[in-house]
Length: 144
Image 1 (tube, rainbow, N blue to C red):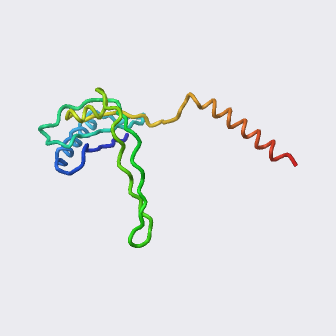
Image 2 (image 1 turned 60 degrees about the horizontal axis):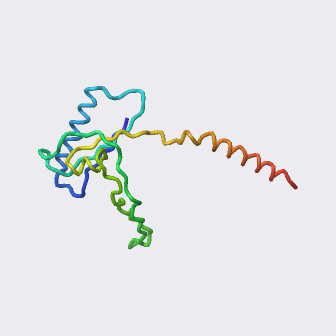
């Protein structure tokens, strides 16, 4: 199992509230023995609020963002390349039921994620395509 914790919004003002939220959630998971044979990943977003202002947890789907800002390449004072990762894109889907909506309302959002990103519907297509390409490569290399 894996859990990704993020505190929403910049700043460290309410890191103590995030810590308390993490401890409570992990403690509950350990008590319920939620570690099993099936791998799982949980995305947790915690509002940057005082603990007494954080509302109950909500299980949500992921919201969506526009594309991220580009990477900025600069030279360091030593002449090495430095890469500044662009900021996340603007919110595209923050409808009710999304993690964005929940955290804006002051809730901690919990989103279970899949760990297998395989596009199972396309496996057969790509197997056939790869086989055809392999035959074409073999035919091309055998011609004088």
